[in-house]
Length: 130
Image (cartoon, rainbow, N blue to C red):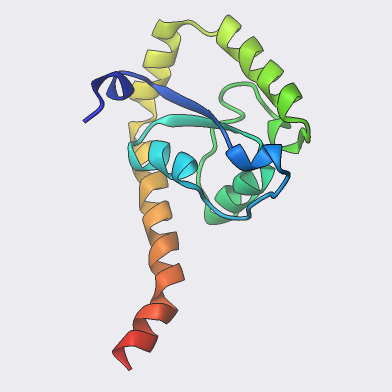
């Protein structure tokens, strides 16, 4: 158990593959962890993640943080600049209040993520059972 991780309200992470411009279409462990742990998240370098998350009905919280259009910024450096601006304008107490008021949304995001993986594994499960 990571006690420091559990004290935070938001995960901000950079996808490693942006350096090589691979552009994975799916979730990585970095994007799964905050959803699983029911936290806010901001992902730099994978706009495809946001597209998939929105298709699944997962709340990405971009609008909540005033980051409308963040998922359309191609440059990870520009995305990082937007995150720095966000961190400079939001205080810890506001973030804490936002976190508390969104607990139900976190749980719903987690449910939708699990359903997505169940649906993805269903054909494999059916194949194995046959």
